[in-house]
Image (cartoon, rainbow, N blue to C red; front, side, top):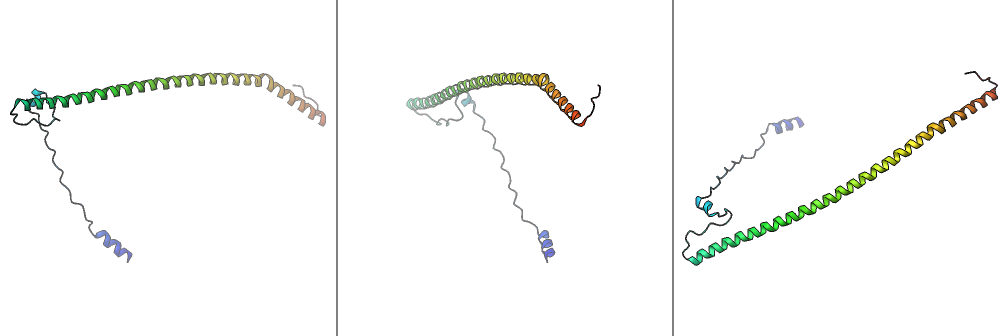
Amino acid sequence: MRKARATAAASKPKPRAAARPKPKPKPKAKPSPASLLSGGSSSLPPAPASVSTVAELRGLAASHLDSSSAGSTRSTMQTQSCLQLADEAEKEHRKMAGKISEHAEAVKASYKKFVAEVCASTSRVCKVTIPEMAKSADRAIDGLRSRYNIPATAV
């Protein structure tokens, strides 16, 4: 029964999602020669097709000037804040570098002190402790010889 269900399920075709056609990319609009000469920004709305009075033309020019001035002001403010942030980051970097070098010097001094202590301790062990232990072992051996009446051998 189980095999029949498994083969029946395996033979059924599974539904597939329909393939969607990919949209074609739209060609980018080329700027007109007039906009290139006037220095107009492509992000600004296009000027009205007909300006009938000098006042409308002045208003349009003032609007463009105001928008350019606002963009320039915004850009200047962002540049100043970016420079200030860069200065703060540089000061913080200098502080951290100074602290790191101080800690490195402290570690070096501590290491030198540790090495000097190890050398002194090792020197003491080699000069004093090992000969003392050898004498103590000789005494213990002599004590065992005398206890068990073993004669000392010539070396």
